[in-house]
Length: 246
Image (cartoon, rainbow, N blue to C red; front, side):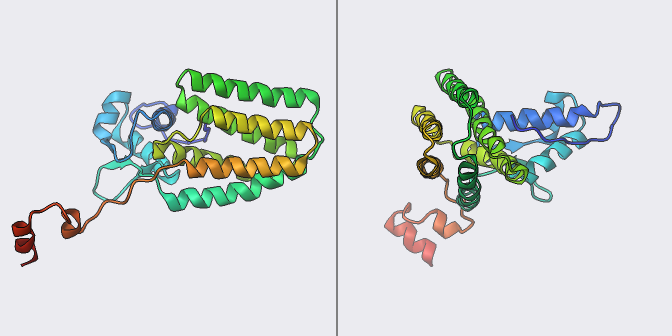
C-alpha cells in the first residue's frame, strides 16, 4: 500500500489521523476502481461520509492533487484526475532507467531464500488477480519491484523507485485498462528465473519488456473539448450544419 506521512492539525477536536484516513480511503478507492476518472468530489459529501470537517477533506484532497490523483481548480469542485499519456510515458522512462540498473546491480548474488521470497510475492499477485482485487494486485506488484530494488543495495535507487511506483499505480488505475494479468505475473516469474540462472542481461531485457508492455496496455481518454463547433462536428444534418456556420 502507498504510505505517505501526512501531518494534519487538529480541527474541531478531530484526531490528527482523520485526514490521513480520508486520504487513504480515497486513494484505495481509486486504485480499486470504485472511483472513476472525472468523478466529482464534494467536500461536503465527503465530510458527511467520513464524519470530518470540510477543512480536513480539503487537506486530503490537496495531498491527492500533489500525487496526481485529483484535479483541483480554484472555485471548482475537485474531481478524480484523468489518465495522462504524457505523465505515464515519463514515468515509464524513469522506471526503465532505474529498474534496468537495479537488475544489473543485483547480478547473480541472490540467495535461494531471496529467490523463493520473490516467487512467493508473485504467487500473491496471482491470488489477487483470481480474487478480482485490483488494488491488491497493484500493491503486490509494487512490493515485488521494491524488493528487487532493496536487493540492489543502492538506497538512492530504492528511494527514487519508491517515489515513482505510487504514481505509476495511479496511472494504471486511472487508465481503466487491464494492465496486469496472468501474463504480467509470468513476466515477473521470468525475471526471477533469469536472475536465478545468473543471466543478468536476460533479466534486464525481460524487465524492460515487462515495463513497456504495461505502458502499451494503458488506455487514455482524449481531453475534453471546449470548442463548441468541434463538439458537434459531424453530428448535425446538412441544414443545421449550414446554419451553424452562418
